[in-house]
Length: 143
Image 1 (cartoon, helix red, strand yellow):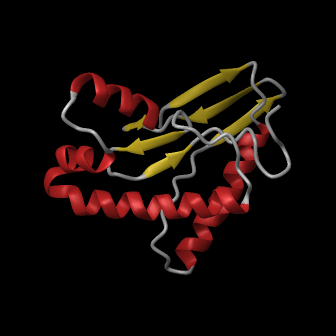
Image 2 (tube, rainbow, N blue to C red):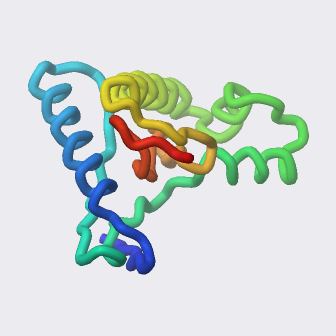
C-alpha cells in the first residue's frame, strides 16, 4: 500500500465520509448489486495531520483530458479514448465505468457530496471511476 502523509489538513471528515462509503459498498455487495465503489483508507492522526492511501494506477479526469488534448488530438471524447486505450478490454472497461458511475452517483446523492469536479474524480486503469476529496458533504458546504 502506498501512503500520502498530509499536514495542515483536518482529515476527520474525509475519514468519516470514507467510512460511510465503505458501508455503502458493503450494502451493494450484500445485495449482489453490480455497483462498484473503491473506498480507500484515511486515518486522521490529529487536528491538522493524517495518513491517506494513495490510489495507484489512476489519473484525475482533469489530467486525462489535458493529456488527451496534448498527445492525442484525434480523440475528441471519452468513448473514443476508451476504444483507443482499452482495445480488446473495451467491454469490461465500459462495464466497470458504468457500474462505478452509478454507484458513486447514488452515494453522492445520498450523502449530498459537494465539490465534484474533474480533479476530484479519478479514472482507474480498469475503467472504474473513483471519487476522492470528501471535504464537503451532508450539511457542510464550501463558502
